[in-house]
Length: 336
Image 1: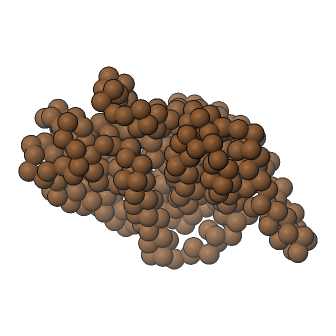
Image 2: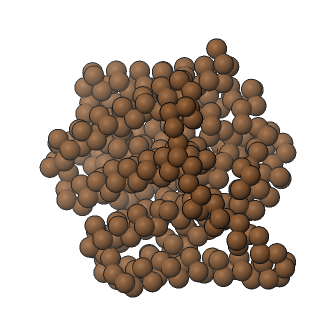
Image 3: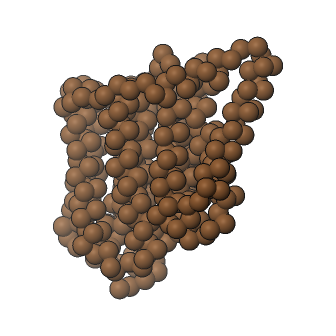
């Protein structure tokens, strides 16, 4: 198996410059279309949104600034995903596909425009996963557990449901032979650190709403049903899901070609996807946020498939997916 950077001249190479430019142009076209139609603007926070997110949306009164922030957070998250892939070697060949696929998945859903709490929450989840993977077989990973929980705590100030990923973090620690009571204690202490600061703010302001209100929504279940999305919405979701399932099947069939460490990381990403889908069903009121978080494992898993399975069928599937997703976004925005 060829290792290192893929040669640009190789047939059916999706890591070549033409594909990178083509997908980038498609994503830019999606953002321009949504900007011209003011998709998602002005931002209207949910009735039980966290006070911090409600305050932030109140400041975003100019569409140019709001969309520019959306693009910035999107590019930053895609870049961090790319750097995490390089550092952890989730894909055994160097490729920009995780960057491109995350950019694509987050650009073809108008429900993500221009910003939502998960636009920032993605950074916190990415940081938590990176620290988790760094703790692989490290029995003294208490500091990483504390820092990961600190990121989850900060993210929960914008979107409280991010706290539901903390049990998944503990499960990952167990899978990677790192779990201990010290890890759990450090994680809880990381959350306490964040909310101790919030408590201090509440005492100073003599208003405990920022501390109490988010947690009332944490256990507010609203099951999602098929009619929560329209037909075109479902087509877009099912297309990306289908490609991800194909990638997972490929991973299972060819898993012995990766080393043990990479295999465990990829299996955790599959668990991450399943856990996010369960939360999406349970918390239908935050379906857009969970779908955006789901773009993280989907981008890595599908990038793993398209990087290693270089044949005309995978090549065609990739370009069909890009074209259909972009077309579905246009249909949803313009209501054809």
